[in-house]
Length: 502
Image (cartoon, rainbow, N blue to C red; front, side, top):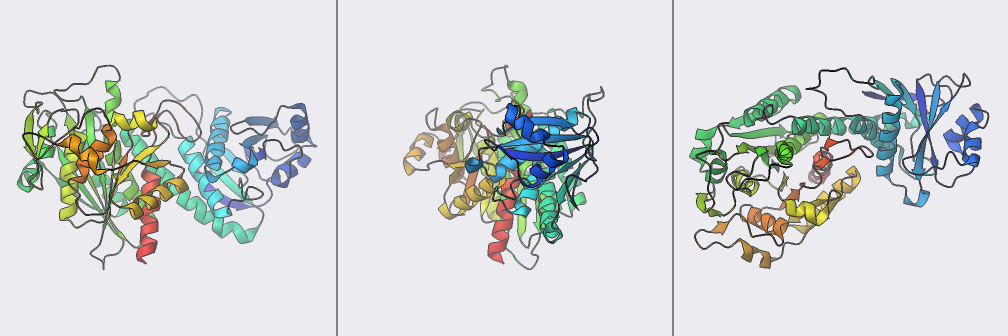
């Protein structure tokens, strides 16, 4: 879908439908909604008076214009209570309205800049949120469905602005919103793929295609190269699968004169059966999404490359399956990570931290700093925070605060979890330097403490997206399936760090 800014009056724009809005409790619409109300001979006011339009968040009311406007239909979208209004509500409102209009067969839709008036939101931010809400909210994954869709695609969204002096701001907002939401949808596509279509080799090929499309540098390490580097933890996980492991390295060189580079590390388990410590069969199909962290950092780099900040960024993705083959790791085995630390594998289903251990060691060898890793790491984090928040763990308070701020601006909630030294006790092993799980209690924290053993003093944030990587229902700009969470946060963080360096 194409999002563009046009100048004019919403009452005079030619489209299949127009979107206006209303705060809850407002009896007489003003601004652009008031102008549409007058063009419709007070139809909106009468529907408010009758109680049919209430302005509650998520409410969508359809009015047929019957020739009184150049659009055939008008949607009045509820913004909720004005004191509770925030930028993320714009994304939600636009997503719901656009999905509603897609079901009605609309292909060309016009919208006002929601919240840019009495809502107190900057016009550029409103335009950004409009683009994000529409593109994220209209996402579908139909690659393997042969029947025709029931509705046609919404092809064009027009952001209507009367003041020509604000057009440049709105165009910047739309461009940013389009780029980051298309990047998030790229991650969604990868995560939603069945595991037989998104093997480690397929993931590496996607990285190569991404490098060609966006001018990135791509290197893919194969098993023998990993062995030479001493990546025993990653290779230990990989040894149960017939699929060859891949270690993906993507570079964005936005500041070629600098040796510094930000590191983004993503877990790339393309299917996780649990290995010998096998998972229950119920819900195992969802484990095709255990490479969501890897997809996130790859997709984020595509967005960064399109926005072209003056900064260097490297994405690392250790990619493998975790299967219970005859050669698979056994509980009680000991593997050695790239930095020489020995790890007792007490549970083969705690494999994500093993492959990330070697990836974080490799990131340190490249001199990447700061580091942010993203992983569907622990069910414990999903139990602790549900599907609302991503868990953040850090050794650097200043860095995690920047990550949380970037998440707030993206509408992706990030909650900082504790990293007290006492939790490390649970990871102590009697036969190796460390064991790969500290047990049930504080499981998300002990997993993060395990990763911390491999970053040492490098500023680092670990994002556990186990609860937020998938949605089981359609709500706002989330659709059922992969959410693409973290992509927009990482892009925003990178731009903020680039500004600091500048």
